[in-house]
Image (cartoon, rainbow, N blue to C red; front, top):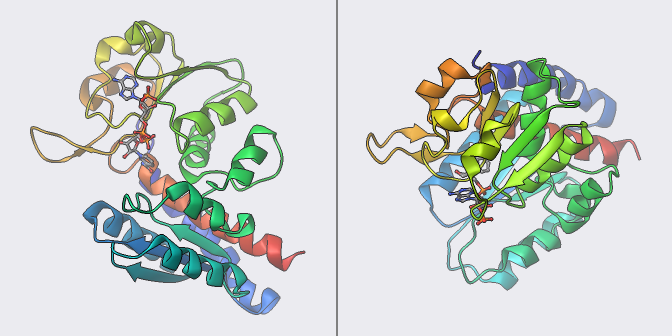
Length: 283
Ligand code: NDP
């Protein structure tokens, strides 16, 4: 079975649109998401456009602030400070990566935790690891949602996560652990990676290497979640970290690239924006 993140996210966004349509009467306005885009990186431009389009579909107000990559860190911090203090702004997202002269950690930490729709703020990260209420990072949240919607039993399963980044590998491992999976986190120094991945009932791959996971690294009947977004060096087309065609025949469930984890990430961003809005309105 191929889980279509595209179809699932379309259904979830339609449900959110109904909820958001009731907000003006209840709260006087709709949620407002501000996305800051620094520079012209084509990948970032396309992600930001996707976020604006999804906001429109759900009925969330979206403002995109575009700045040249010569912007100073101070100026960017000034914009964030203004947005932090603006009562009409519920979510702030700074599209990453930022130019090298800007310290990403400082920028992320400057966003008010209550408006951190990406779930990257140190306080949100700490809350996740301490099992306290928080805004969850969008990609890991979307992955767990896909697994649950597909009826995958997480409790007691052997989950293997390939990649240990702060935005995908580590938080998805924590969410799988919280769902009572037995979790192994692997990385570039893992020995005999194929043997470890072969033991997985659930394999989540987030490394950023085109078609890196080969058929012999996956067990028959495994559930395979492909987070990678890469260009296939041979065809120039988008592809994941998983060699999809042979593995699709072997896996019980697999996510495609494009149309898998990506749309779910944006969908969870919409959900996070609504959650931040509601937390404020219902205080
Ligand atoms: P990072 O570059 O931050 O992390 C990559 C991780 O993969 C590291 O932990 C690294 O190990 C590990 N790794 C690299 N090479 C190998 C290898 N040969 N064997 C085992 N592990 C390896 O990447 P991200 O987590 O940010 O992103 C990963 C991929 O997911 C990218 O393609 C990105 O574009 C995509 N992505 C997709 C999203 C979506 O919504 N669909 C959202 C976010 C990311 P080590 O720590 O040892 O260096």
